[in-house]
Each structure stands twice: as C-alpha cells, then as structure tokens.
Image 1 (cartoon, rainbow over the protein chains, first blue to last red):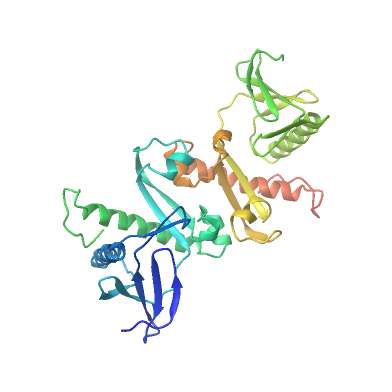
Image 2 (cartoon, each protein chain N blue to C red):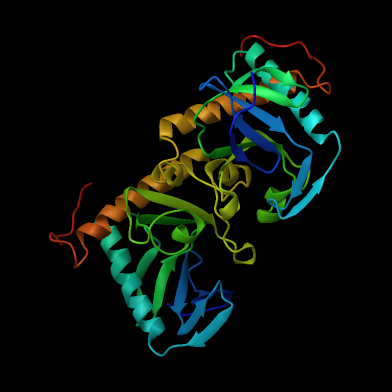
Length: 178
Length: 178
C-alpha cells in the first residue's frame, strides 16, 4: 500500500489516501506541540515511539473485542487504517484528579476519582476543545444521546482493559471478556 | 419578622437571619454587576423591580406545584424565605442559542434549540462558575446523579410553566398540572 494525496496534517500525524478508497495511511511525525499547538518543536524518534505505542494499544483493544480503525503497520512510523468517519468528541476518563481538572474545580491533585470521571470535549482546536455535555453534543449534531452513551460505555471498558494490562497492575493477563 | 445578623452579601442580594431560625430575610439591593462582579454600579429601583419579579416568579411556581423557598414579602424589596441548603449548581435552560453558547460552540445566534439545551454550572464566583457534567458534579459531592436528574426534570417543568404564562404566549392561563 502506498501513500497518495495528503488529506490532513494535524499536530502530530499526517493522513494520506492510498490506492484503496477504504484505507488511509497515518504518518506519526516527530513534531511536538503544547498549549493547543501554540508551542512547536521536533523531537527525534517521537513519531516512531508514538506509532509503536499506538500499535500496541490498538492491538490490545482488538484482542479484547473493541473495534478500532487499525489494520497494520506499513513502516515503523506509518500505520494503515480504515477510512472512517469519526465523532468529533474527545473522551477523557479520569481515575485520579490531576492537571486541568484540579485548576478548574476544587479537586486535590492526586485525589482518586471513584467512580472515574468522564469528560467529553468538542474536538475543535480553533475553539480550544471546549467541554461538552450531552445536550450540547446532540444540539451540535455531533452524536445522538444513544451514541454518546455507547461511547461512554466503551471508554469505561477500555479503562478496565488498560488497567488490567498495565505493567503496574498485579494481574497483567489480557482479558477477553468484560 | 425583623432582620438580625447579616449572613452573606452577594452581587445583588444580602441575606439576614431573623428571630425564626428556619427563616431568612433576603434584601434585593440596587447594585448592578457585570463580568462576574468585575464591573459595579448602582441603579435606582433595581432592587425593587428584582424583588417584585422574583415574587411573581416564585408565586407562579408555587401555584403550579413547584416548591420554592419563598414565604412572603416583608417590604417592597425584602423577602422572607425558608432557611434551606442549596445545591451549588446553576441550571440554565436554553430554548434559543444566544450569548456565551454561540461564542463557545458553533451555534448560530437565534438558532432554536429543540429539544432545549440544559447547562449546569458550578456556582463559584472565584472560579467563574465553570461548566459541570454529571460525573464532575457527583465527584465534587455537589449532588448525586439522582438529584441532578431531578433538578433537570424540574428545570424542564419550570420552562413549560414560564412559557405558558409568558405575555408573549398565546395561552397565558396558569397551568396546574404538567
């Protein structure tokens, strides 16, 4: 499979068409950004490591019955993926309070969040990814309430898969059912 | 009923204890603020009109079976209310896109929101009332998921009561059941 027309270039990856209309190639670049892309730099091997970590994570998810767009690696930092339409919602599952959530709300840094706190942001760099609620997401036409409930359920399943397979976890055997 | 110790003074109202430990007096002041209290001014009769509008709204809600903390007016701008513990959540029901929501998200000004969009903010001036979702509200201990569902249901009931009783509405007869 070969890279064709460049479709989109984001903060860390560039997406290309291929001979197959149903497949894209994602190139993981060495670019480094912070503050929503305001600060930029290059770090050698960053693309390689990002691609390899993503590969491992997608394989882990597929192994545990979560569908992803991952097909296979083309090179060490190039990934063949399905041409899919994404929901423009970024899903963050917080097990421990840290970072922005402790600045915005009175949580202590390091405070365990049990049950975990799910935050959904609207993926829109120009608007700095504003936080959504389900009414707003639906009114914007991003997803239906049913789709959002499904996304949330999947996020919680992935949380368990990652925790069980973490090197920090006592039991790191892949799980096949949840 | 007489004003005792001053309990709290906010942007527009001051709350006093009374002889009755279960009742407070709220004084509607002539203060005017904007930008979360950054700009301040005094406007003659503002307290009077705010108090009278609040009285009408509380009476309308009570008449339609929604419990409030309202008891009676003490003077034209002083209201006797129950001593209650409030949930620190501000509930905004939007029927039409306008103001902040059109700046934060790609809604057109004037766009009808059908179904209405409910936004819940954490009442905390120092943090500029950050938007909540249900997970965050629960993790902060502000309310349980069940209480939030109840708050949302009540907000939607109040929306209907206010719309049916609006002078702009074709049918402005008070409704007793929903």
